[in-house]
Length: 348
Image (cartoon, rainbow, N blue to C red; front, side, top):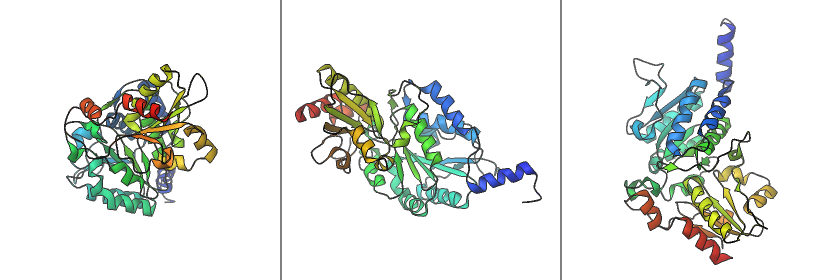
């Protein structure tokens, strides 16, 4: 080490310490300034963010198990091959478990920032590796797309309904489900800062309408949950809570309730694990001290009682999905603003 040129030695010291290069956050902020207010698929937002981060973080290594097309996390990265060891994208083949194990190995060795992306329903193939990453405190970024019945015609075999709950049950794993492009950028910033364990970043296949239109210097996802829309016209009576693609549904329901004279707030809760670590006073203020609480998530209810109580309302899935167009499926299973409004009304 002492014989190396000063710049080379500084680079190796940074990589050994796991520190990110200066300026990577500016890439995210610049992207947010362009993407705020824009509708896009969650997985496309993530792929655009990773494409920019790969410029700022030369040790970032991406990859997927034969899903380069639908996940889009290769972009400009060259493939790592036997003849090009400078490539930063690994083609794992149809081997999620091998991918997870290799990501863990890279993180344990150090010197790289490893991420791997696949469909959420295939996370079971990775589960032993995810569990070990959490047990070992490895900063692996497990990225997932196609996160709900919103994927449409793929049908129930590819529509995860119980996977959010099962991943949230793994100790020392941060599960992040952003609601739009801005939250996606904040989730990635949060994941890259997190060095004590793995993160599961979960994105939609379908296009998400923007829920954050104004640019903020504060990373609001970093607190796990926050008030996205305040109640207006009096003391809050209803709190609607959502994650990911269902936050937009909660906002649409709020418009109806506010129009009926019911002061209603919307809470985005992208990361339960971080929200649970916040001060109890903050959590109570976000969730509402004495309000009706209704959660909406295109997944099973399991675990939501912690935030809405045993008697809280829940709009989501109670069984498996079906094949059909996205909008028809959401209506068929009652994951709509109208159902959220009716649930809130019934509890007032």
